[in-house]
Image 1 (cartoon, helix red, strand yellow):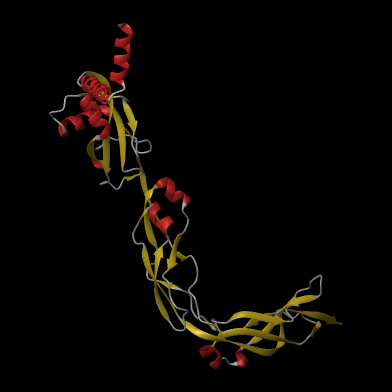
Image 2: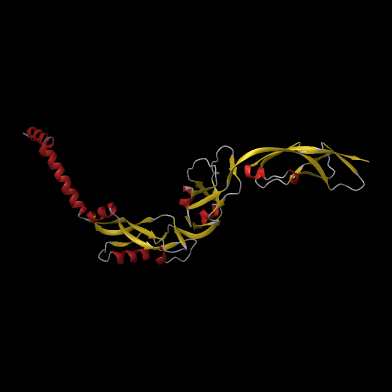
Length: 314
């Protein structure tokens, strides 16, 4: 008879009716467990709003564990959907700007005012918590470009680049500001330039995100002209000639080559160009050649030869 009962019991457990019974029993046990009162911790989310120039946010929110005594249903719900409290940085009772902390008694008072009908929270677990804010500072930067504009073949700048902002101001974390030395802008895509231009440039993303800036976009302008190569042969002139000494130079002339805008080349007066050497006794018996009278826009200057030898004839 007992064998029949055991066999019948095994068949019941393995049947659909048995499975439904086990599920129903588990549900009843879970509901009973969740209806009990427990003392544990649940997270409370504190969101921060910056309304003071003294600080900057390092994180927009933090979660602080709060000790509660409540039913399992309430605890489970609060862990899945933490309650949220908005905090203004201006209202925080911060005493040390370099080490900003807050007493959790202040947070509990703020929470109770926002949720006056909630008496579940006994208190927050830590007595003091660090705040995700840092002392703010500001610093000025001269804008620089990550790379020069693109020019068509034979065209170059004829004047220094000009920015519509001489300097821009960054505001934010003092630690980040101390590590940053340049405000680097990237030019918007453009066709190779053949004429004077005005282009937009944006602060590179990595730098823009690190701080708050007075502007993240500037305008860059410049003058452009076609460059052409030109060469001249110039006599070498000696300066600082010693008294009562006859100094001879060799060679007595040099060839110079440089590039300049077509507009400048048309107005170059060869008589304004000069190749000079300043006399001083040197171990090698050679003097360096210096060219004067070149247009300000001249580039890629070469002098052949770059030095001349001197001889003192008694």
